[in-house]
Image (cartoon, rainbow, N blue to C red; front, side, top):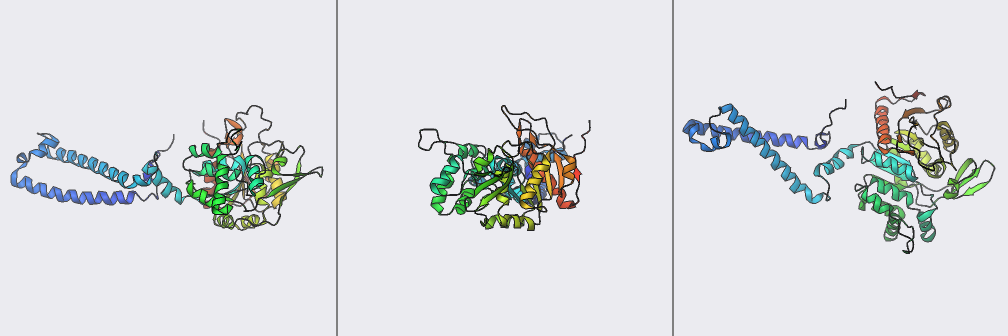
Amino acid sequence: MRGIRLPRWLYPGMHIKRWLLLAFVGITILGLGAAIFLVDLYRRFGADNIPIVFWLTGAGLERPIRAVIVGIMGLLLTGIGVWGLMRSVVSPFVARGDSVLEVLYTKRYLARGPRIVAIGGGTGLSTLLRGLKGYSANITAVVAVADDGGSSGRLRQQLGIVPPGDIRNCIAALADAEPLMTQLMQYRFPPGSGLDEHAFGNLFIAAMTAVTGDFEEAVRESNRVLAVRGQVLPATSVPLNLSARLVSGRRLDGQVGIGHAEEPIERVFIEPPDVRANPEALERILEADMVVIGPGSLYSSVLPNLLISDIRDALDAAPGMRVYVCNVATQPGETGSFSAAEHLEALFEHIGEGLIDYVLVNRNRHARQPEGWLGEPVQIDERRLEGLPVVVIEEDLVDVANAHRHDPAKLAAALVRLQQEDRLERPRQRRLRRPAASAS
């Protein structure tokens, strides 16, 4: 049986209940004064000589019943008046279509949520953010900037800016006006328009860069203008070039090429190797209650961020919990046939051990496989995982309609539960934890 869900205005931290209580006390005192006056009238003239009381409550009723009826009418009128006052005062500051309580919930309750930093790129990161924004407004997305394909790649080549594609996806995911904002930011101009296949969001960020004169400032202003719940930050202000060495010794250059590698990847590199990270991103990592790495393409979306030495150092010094979200499915060209342990081992080979406390893996293998899908569910090799220096958490995380993607709500709920448990217990022992069997 589900627990009773409180109205949002009763949630702790909304700063509403105290003022309602104060108003109720004031009205009660006012009513007491009115009652004293009415009692005096009763004593002077008698109840039968005050016809308004009988008109409001009905003739022939006992005095206690009349008192209850009048009290209910008073509470009803007071409630209508307070609600109307709230709407009149607050509505000019509320966007059309939003409710006052929804805005107060966002500004008050979510503002007290945990400080979460999500590191990654691609569709995996935007999926994560879409779920997390329902639990906290203190979200920072640190986004990879190594994309060299599609609209982002063309803008990078023509304008020399940091590729905006993954940043666009994250801004759309965190926008208050989603899904309308998602449709706008993801809109691609048709062939023959002169802007063939460019995404509107990419052009918006490129234009904002030209206006502000700085890419980081452009992203910061985009967060503000588009009412993002949290903030989106590029990992660095310099476009990164990603390269990979394959097991045969052959080298692949560019994120697009790496994503279609025809043989296993041995190692990936970024150029320039000594690039400086975004200082604001480093600050957020050091302040975070939880740092989430992934989900996303391991070699082309997740690792480009972690190969920046400043980010690794900040992650090492971070006081909050550090969680790696393993992909729910393998990715041909990057992680074909990889198990959960192999994902982790590849990560450790690049960044070393000790930077991750937990790994979150999916235990549900029964989601629908998309037509033409070449991947497969990531297997949980328990014995191999137990040999790694992390706490492994198994949860149902997959979107049942698409075996290739996480479910945003499931993933966010699992992470918030883990953060709350970690805050209370701070376990750091090596173990494998599974969810308890549900009662039949």
